[in-house]
Length: 172
Image (cartoon, rainbow, N blue to C red; front, side, top):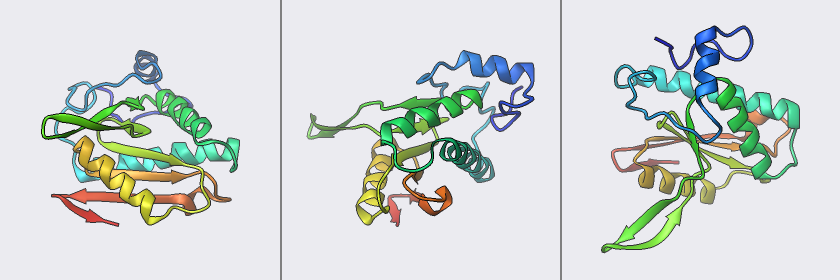
């Protein structure tokens, strides 16, 4: 069974390459798919996934540097996710329902392995508004963990914010 944090692009196994080929950009394997998550993911696995995502984002930043549009970084991150064999969805519309009526639609940039919501930014600084936006995405998607990746930094690590939503409580 292929582990989601197994071999990456360089020197990866044939199975990892086949898995990456199965995932077209924008394709997603369900988080309950036994091929990807044989059991409910533990916090340790989720942390390993976020470390892997951050590593892929750093690779994008090394190649592109700061100053591009958010869309360029989003597409590049998706290329890295697919090459690493990590399933994701991109820009899916999530309706907000009020008393049975759709009142808005939210579009998180990327959801990785149906566990981690990514919000790609290219701004001077991540603010409380960006964190509040991520909390909204987490509530709407039913996810608990999000990463805000601000590529408009000299060093990407300075532009990463981890946002956690636990049992309806917010953590800014």
